[in-house]
Length: 473
Image (cartoon, rainbow, N blue to C red; front, side):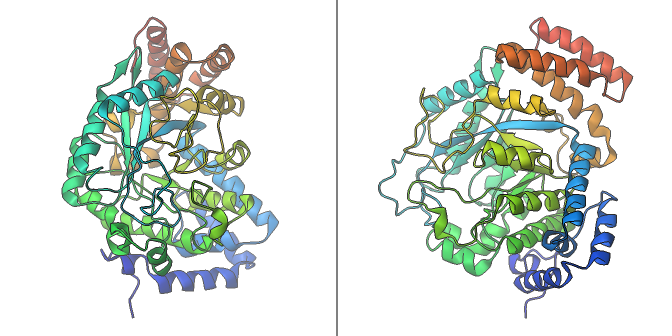
């Protein structure tokens, strides 16, 4: 019998099937145990998180009053640690060549009618200019797994190109990387290239289902994939981002596995995931979400987000343009701290005047422009942030988490959000967005805790109006 051990470096021990199934049985047994649920919520109010079993009980809870308490607590915890800021980013697809046989992804090797494309460095530069002209400062690069067409050298060259492009007042200040599991040596190369967060979705934590969904290719190796974050951190990458593709397996199983992965990283690396993403299976070329009989309602999707925020209070949570504006509006208050905006999921899509669909990895459900997303966020009371300061100032890994836990983040991230918003308003925003943004900045300056910081922000905002850029705390 394989024993559960969060300190183990073996995937089958820190993501333990028996422990997950016992957890789900426990949650089902206690889903209406109000006394236990109250105890768990009381513990969650301490802002120190919950373990996977406690959080699973909250996820299973059916009492409407307690569910509202969970939602209200998730919203308050998010405000306590991340304020009313929402960080914006965009994905950049470099290549859809892939040797894997993933059944849920249109890039799978057997899909012979999708157009295969790999960006040249000149095309990468054009994509970056298009993204800069929207106002983006932070990208997440995406690529299929193909050692011939997309070797690590190609990824590194693309990162160098992205950082080198300066167009008008535009600059990409942080490149996050979402590529296949690789070696410690390659993670060191990514670290040396100056990446931000290394992101890798588990897809599903159910090993049997994982192997069925990945019948061919290197991604078939469950253990190698699941243990990737430990290799990345061994390679010097401080910030890693995890996630599952909800809909591939039972959502409660995935939820428990996701939290167990976070607990494992905390136990062995001293710091949990920098971000947790919650994508859902969506329609794409050659892919029908109905083929996966594990879909979940929008209400349950929101409940999952709330329970993740309570269980892992310091971790950033990401929602993408896979979701509709309506769903994003519901879920954003429950713990989300990062969203994509103006996204295109096709290779070379940003440089095209019209959105191409022939190489999309999935259908985009929120087709608003970045300016429209920024406008919507401000009308909803959120500060759109293009900040990348923590990474560039070395506040990563345990240093970022300590800043977040202590509350000092308010004297860094809040003013940085306002200054980067000011840049966006001057360089890229529509007239209506400018009016909303200027009013928001005037209001929000007064909420910065430290008087000296407030004074410095006012001075720097004037300098930004006079043409200076890239101030940060």
